[in-house]
Image 1 (cartoon, rainbow, N blue to C red):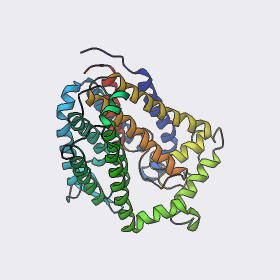
Image 2 (cartoon, rainbow, N blue to C red; image 1 turned 180 degrees about the vertical axis):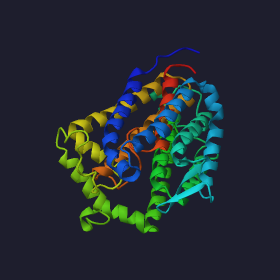
Image 3 (cartoon, helix red, strand yellow; image 1 turned 90 degrees about the vertical axis):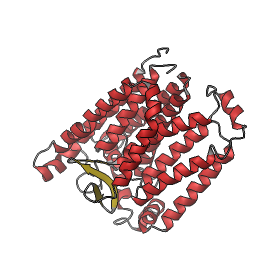
Image 4 (tube, one colour; image 1 turned 135 degrees about the vertical axis):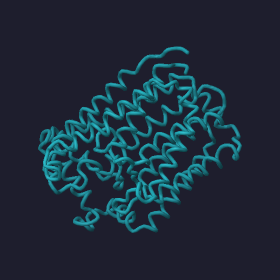
Amino acid sequence: MKSGQFDYILFFSVVILLILSNLILAPLSAPFSFKRFGTTNYFVIHQIVYGLLPGLALGLFFYKIPLGFLKKISPFLFLINIIFLIFVFLPFIGSRLQGANRWLSIGGVTFQPSEFLKLSVILFLSGWLKNISADQTMTKKYLLKTRKKNYNLRSSLIPFLVISGFISLILVLQPDISTLTIIALVSLILYFAIGTPFWHSILIVLAGAGGLIALINISSYRFSRLLAFLKPEIDPMGIGYQVKQALIAVGSGGFWGRGIGTSIQKFGFLPHPMSDSIFAVYAEETGLAGAIVLISLFLVFLWRGLKISKATSDKFCQLAAIGISSWVVIQAFFNIGSIVGILPLAGIPLPFISYGGSHLVTELAAVGILLNISKHKNP
């Protein structure tokens, strides 16, 4: 086993993201915390105790774990995650909130299994796709060569569609279409990365688009979100309210922002300011300059993740690094894009920034895996 080099750039980019999260979340959550619990620091402490600390512990665990062992247990992690996703529909331990079955409550701890699914799917697919790909390094020459290869449909496309369909069914029943969209896009990237024929990817995209259209047509809520994206001015106090208030927050920040803790939109105007809409508060307080810094940090995360993938010769690690880096950046793009009006409202957290323990724990665990891969050129 040859030693690589610990990726300090990736590490410190995540540290800066966590610092920015605390700088925004502490003053943002204070009035809501005081109104509900009589103390100004409840949500910050909750985020640290149930998000940051277990996330750092799990990240350290995955940083230390042998990558060969991680590869072996990835199917079991995926299976356990699927079981937890099914458990959300059971009484007593499954929690229903705002019409969705997405949470489990065990021993007084509530968490969202679909957040962990993002990582477990990446690890599972990385191990499975490694086995059906050619035993060569993933270089440009390799990709061009294997792209021409006639992959057996029974060993590649059909199983991929079956796995994707099963995951989609569970998430649709919750329902959690935003998470499904993220997982579907990352899964497609991984499937494409092993050199499968272009027409496979085109077929998957068409099938996914058809399914998404069907889901929009059968749900008035999803149709309303799409309508709010296309024409937010139709009902500015109804379906277009969140988009309108988010744009007001972003626009009022100017170039340098109002200053940390001085957001106006967070006081009863902007829905979900600590979670889905936290970028709007961030942009209002730090301005365009702060937004550029934040987006740059996510681009650095993508750059280092892809660089880590390129530096290792193990295909499982290559695919895992591609999957993790693309997942975090795609989710950030969806969150920010929905806030500034270039995408429909996604209802997903901004990685490392939004309030919520489940997503932060999962993201820090994923960072641990990336850093683990970075220190080993040949796991």
